[in-house]
Length: 204
Image 1 (tube, rainbow, N blue to C red):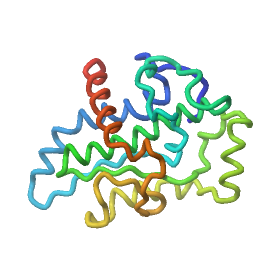
Image 2: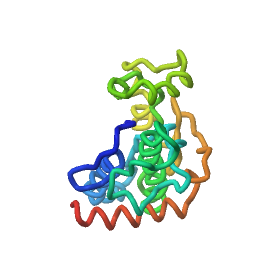
Image 3: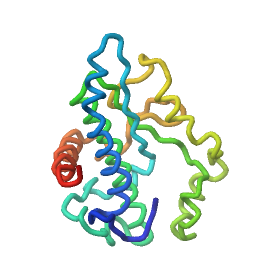
Image 4: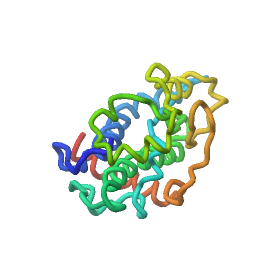
């Protein structure tokens, strides 16, 4: 989260490669068994994507596909916002991917969740100027680490009828309509899906 410019071993912007492509590859590898299970009577198959309210920090284009195979050092707003733009781009991808999974695999329940502002070591190495806007915004409303898994645990275990596939949930279990144009862009979700499948051919 909010890392300096860098790339994964495969050459993708490091936050996008880790937060989106890594998860997308895992989902792809599991999809055959997920689909087979979903075809069984009374099945309840779920994919829970860990997004974040950080999706709001994505750049104006939402996802800059043309430069994803680079460190994207100047993505989005002025410094130190570049770090948050790269992070927001990856969290937007998590949200959009759940939306498109729901459309393409209607027998599987796919949702994206925001875990809350959890005081984990994600912030341990974030420079003070980068961290300061978040500290001001959150104030004293941090989620204790012990409660950090609550949202995703709820999404994984609540009764199936409590979930709407393709939806984004904020803590805890609150169905929430994303507030940015990019997060509601079905075409962008489709473009992300196509780009991701093409890239995964080289990674699988």
